[in-house]
Length: 267
Image (cartoon, rainbow, N blue to C red; front, side):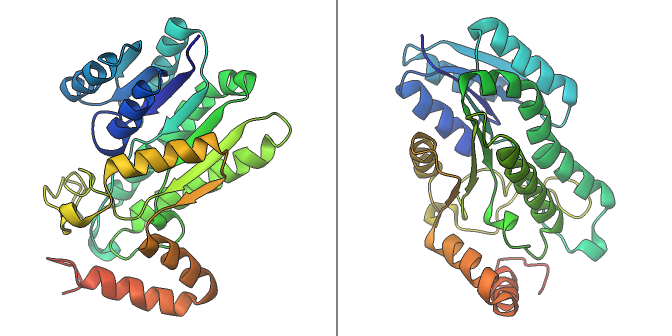
């Protein structure tokens, strides 16, 4: 029987790349995203590799959607070996000018979405001695200016997953936290502005960023080797190290980096 992987936010970017990589390697797939059209497109690609795909339209910020996603996949496959909590949204705006509802939405998706899906998948994952993955960010190690809600949600996700890992030291459950640096994806186009509406533009040259496929390949390799953390890109690794040992310098470097972005809120 094929191993079963569940992936949230699998309609584009890293999630889609993770799903395609899994399909190429013979995994049965459960995938969820908000856009049915994009979800069906991802499912079609994965099915072309001859694997079974259960796709469920849903929003991870809604508890019942997460419960339905896991339930449908268990009904279809009878097991879960890997859960990849990938769905997420970002933001861009100075906290003083940002609506509180924006931060709530970030927490609902990035943190609570991970909690909801993990809660319902956990009994099956423990039974399989499987893997829980959280696609976090360098922002989960270093708070980013103009991304206060995003950083808070990723710090929360990582704290939750680290605690879960410690609780399950004796059960065989593997917990992996993945922290990509800047990655080519749609997350910056859909990032919320200070009023809570999508900014519909990216402040970065997406063609010069790490590809979603490269992130997916590195993540699957980390799952195979049962790594605890995966920090990607040289910039990302340096950010984590500098913040740990030289936090004041990290603040200055981070501020200056964000300030140089096109249409930066610091200009």
